[in-house]
Length: 310
Ligand SMILES: C[S@@+](CC[C@H](N)C(=O)[O-])C[C@H]1O[C@@H](n2cnc3c(N)ncnc32)[C@H](O)[C@@H]1O
Image (cartoon, rainbow, N blue to C red; front, side, top):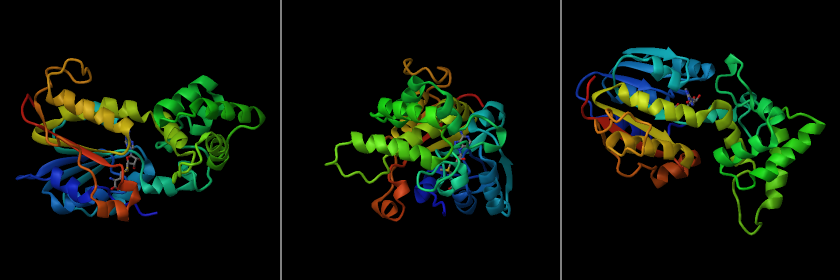
């Protein structure tokens, strides 16, 4: 499955506006779709490409290696990357979540549609806990809380009970296995008059993926660190795909651009050195949504560093 970069024109526009060679960090390089556009359209002096998934980084390497400026590849979580990066960048870009390759790969264990091992780790080579480990060992309460918090699924308790009942007979091994159990609960629990186009296990799968990879905490930690690594005039752009991600982006950007002390994730000394460039998030035009349904919930927000010490 080809990954089509989302909000491509808009990302190039908002990451543009450069009048000198720029250091660009793509914190979620994926297959290199956005990065190849940045190399083509922006005056990039060096590009740092980050991805937690080793296989994705290899794809990006094949696609970007011939790019004229220095491109370096970093197989790291983005929060870990920004915790150790001590340079300054002119453009930092995040395109959150997983790519179409992940969703199409049975062995990644992300896909509801193609059956594969129930894994969902972006850093499969490192041996952290898989989605199967979590659903087979965590308490009914923990599983319900995660499905509710990370999937906003109102049937979380019923789904969790069905998971625990089923695992006492046989542990979960495959995505198909789990999708079947979840679908049986959700289809029963839903109002049938409502036509739902999504697979009934979509919310549960999203929740498990976020849980396995600690996605929201990583975003919460990475964004303020990334903002601190912007040179004056530098921009940080983030594309999010669901309300849980977008809420963190919106709050962090508000904290960066105001003195609001109720928003604690940004050091007060850092605040007000930033200006919010997108008062409203940038969303895809109808033609993009028609051509790529995966873009329909995308939102791009951008802040710019206007002062402070470098
Ligand atoms: C939506 S895809 C990016 C696609 C890319 N912009 C393109 O056009 O090809 C997101 C990528 O970010 C990676 N990713 C997600 N969360 C991450 C994290 N916390 N740290 C590092 N990489 C992450 C995923 O492995 C995936 O390859």
